[in-house]
Length: 506
Image 1 (cartoon, one colour):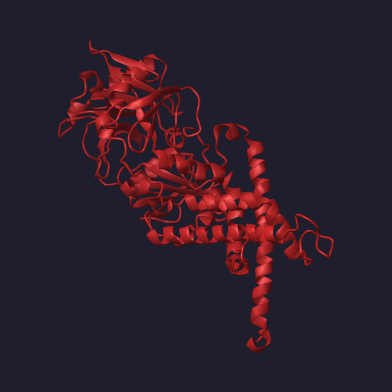
Image 2: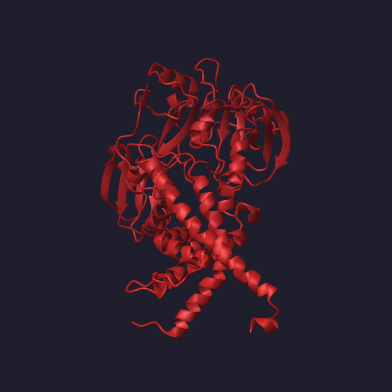
């Protein structure tokens, strides 16, 4: 089908004038994308948080759950025994309220977190390092994550000395919830902070920022797509121009913009388009048919078995298996209370009470123990179930620098495919008994349109390590060449328009 002259002319004009500013933005995206391969946005991973915590002691450690001044909760689920400021503390997590902290030795509620309390826990995280309280903030350029909402305002702790940086401490619990080394901050100015245009964001949920990024990404996608069309139209696949070249452009910047644009066109288009998909425009990738019923999976709350109300016995049972816990978390699965224990390396153990009052320690749940609860996640049944001993294309662990690198996805895992309207696939981490991931049909499409096209993050590609990184860097440099030649061409065109008076432009 022949394309009309007017359509071609419109395509040329769209590419020309959207490319003037679009190439500048795309050049910044390509540079910051390379930086993000090795320096991620500041985050505190699970293993970073647990590493400095002291091991819990079985003797003279903790008040049994029933010994709280206000009595034991109807269910212990949501309760955590950890260390804050080097001392054992209970942290109560509510669904709608800020966490509460109790003294583990006596069960009394603790006072609000003061700057001194914030400094005490920061010293555990960064021992033998000069620290200074730098005030409280609700949000700054490093703390946009909605996961921090329950902990705001945040205490800022300035780390001084040889490795300066910032620690952010929760005003609700006194725990360190974020770290941002100074070197990471500096790289982020040309990395994630620049890449996501966070200079225009001032709150965890910012519709203005979201739509700004969507609009700019859509405009740059149009620039790239029209550029491919123009490049193909102008390239002589058969024969040559009078100059003997297949490109009509003789001027160096135009010529190399044309050639580089054709060579790297597939990468540039898919990369910019996948960046647009990352923003989930118009919520096209949000689950349209409901999410898993987590409450049904956990079951009705009830009083935990007596053996699970005594942390000293739990710690002792774990120690007898050679496991040194630094944190205990009370959970519920199918109405059965259990304790999930973590050590300083983020390894886990599952502790359950036996019929005779003993404690059973296991490395993971068995699939047949989880299935009765998993059947309640949706009204429709699960038609396919599979035990994963290795990661698949949807369930996989990223390196810490990645955007989702703080997510801990363990093996073995139970994969279930449901016959609900969204054809949801659920992954249950058998190490913890928790639902690690849920993806309906639209979210699986987003996995390919965003994560794969933007990061090349399938497990086989991730295992290639430096080969994948080098390929992305080379392609990014090609995209940068296309963008920078476009910047020069656009600048020269604008300068010519401005320097010529109106009567001479005709």
